[in-house]
Length: 95
Image (tube, rainbow, N blue to C red; front, top):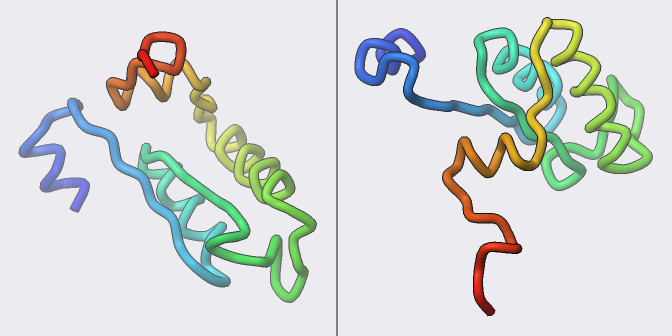
C-alpha cells in the first residue's frame, strides 16, 4: 500500500497504524519503521507485553515512544500534529 501511495501522492501524505489486541506494539513498530505514525491505548489492548497487563495508557505510550526513538524517528509535538492535520488549535476557535 505504501508503494502505491508513494506513486499517487509522492511524499505529501501521512499514514498511521494501530492494532487491537495482542499485536498492538508489533503493528505500531512496523508502522514507525515504514515511516508512519502510531497510536496506542488501553482501548485497543490491555497488555504491555505477552501476558502482562499494562498499568495504564502512559505505560504503553512510554513503550511505543522508546520504540519509535530507537528506530531513529522523532516524536511529534502537539503543534506538529496540528500542522500535519491542518487543525487550528483550541486558542484559534470561537465557542
